Image 1 (cartoon, rainbow, N blue to C red):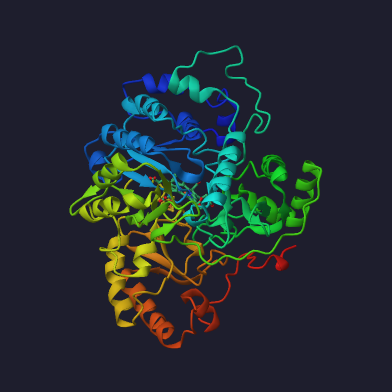
Image 2 (image 1 turned 180 degrees about the horizontal axis):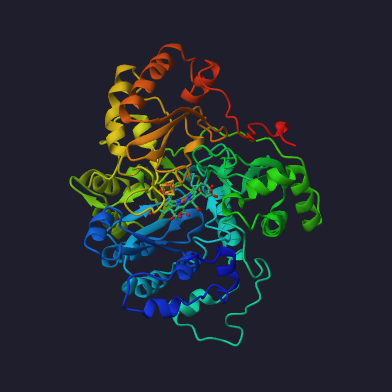
Length: 568
Ligand code: SRM
Ligand code: SF4
């Protein structure tokens, strides 16, 4: 039986309600029907199954171990201690006893069964959080810089992330009706969607705001990139605007490629909503609705040309973009350890293993962070590198927090003896991700153990090399921006990508295809050796690989803009 297209499902979903209410009530299966599995994404959830159990269940003629992943909408990634405790309780009551910090600075929980889904959503709401548009063909979680050192600016930028996220939420009341039992009104199922229209967007749409010199949000991986520009007085003057970033690719299909956003100009704060809306509606109207693999804004831009898309966006806003302003990014990682903010409060960035907060032997992260929550008076900021910042700590409380960090082994420092290990990012992949071709999160600790002797041998323990692993070419860990990336191809086999930079402005290149762990080590050993011996002062690994002629820019379109003068 052939399934209806996602476009048809959206159009016929009665504004994202589908038959979710009926499906949730059906106790004969742990699954939703095909259409509702698509519709539920707009509500921030994915139906999955435990892939570790798949074969065994098939042998036993049982239906797959259906379960749901839930993703929180948390623009800017800030959580209060109360919200954290709420999420902790939800994870331990309904999910698999872990919280997962994602590469878009929010929480996911995994393993919720259908029977508990509605109660879980209600608990999330009771914790003053929601999951609206965390997934689906709409504007997703809006990212903002986590840099705690510039607290004034951070607060402003965080506020922008909140406002953009709220502004671009769909108008439908489906979420409230399905999960929170909101009473139906006459408009129910036919609400006017002024921004999205009847079929929502052709594909997901992502916005991020970076605050130079930190590119911790990897702003160029977003459909709409906003780079905060401050004036001479240190006030927010506006944003440089970039369009068309996205990582998703396919092995061996050159028509599916990662792309770095290209900068098209500058807007004042008053113009931000208009330019964002123009980008979203141009993509809504021109994006490909036939082929979902070709439906992201990057392809619309490359098909029509960046100049034409920019002209259309300007036409819709009624103003002309100003020329992009100068800015400079230093790096796209997190700054670990304590830093003091402008307001005299302190912020501690802890390195988490692929963002997974669980109690494991010798490292009770979930319990330890819960204990911190009980005394913490500030907030938590999740970073796009899957780490957590305990933010807004008075100087007098630092020792208490440090003691808990030590007691519960909360920092990866002890377990991660190299700078590379501390900053490494890996996507979820197996066992929950339906698209995983190889392990990522679960493979990272093994790979770090294998690569550590190489770093030691070449004296590179402190070299801040950016390593990212993805279980498939969709690129959820943003591997194509890493200096070293492993992209899953088959169980135990990866493509080795090399030569991104440490600022998130340059895509890397395929170096070796479909290789095993031993072959990865064999490939990296001489390169790390040469880097150790031949690098210039302060030169990063990816830059060295380019200077030494070991890698070249990739063959697919790259739109790297290190300097706005190179812009349009
Ligand atoms: Fe992703 C699909 C996990 C960030 C590109 N991503 C998925 C799904 C939902 C698999 C699926 O469709 O069945 C994964 C769920 C795994 C699981 O079990 O939890 C998944 N993506 C993740 C997370 C959790 C990875 C992580 O380890 O942190 C990240 C959640 C972000 C969030 O909180 O919203 C995550 N995904 C990203 C990013 C990074 C970013 O946005 O900065 C990308 C690359 C940027 C981009 O969008 O191009 C990304 N995910 C994809 C794609 C490829 C999209 C494309 O247009 O080609 C897919 C596949 C798809 O959508 O068809 C995908
Ligand atoms: Fe799954 Fe692939 Fe994304 Fe990893 S990169 S979470 S394997 S879709």
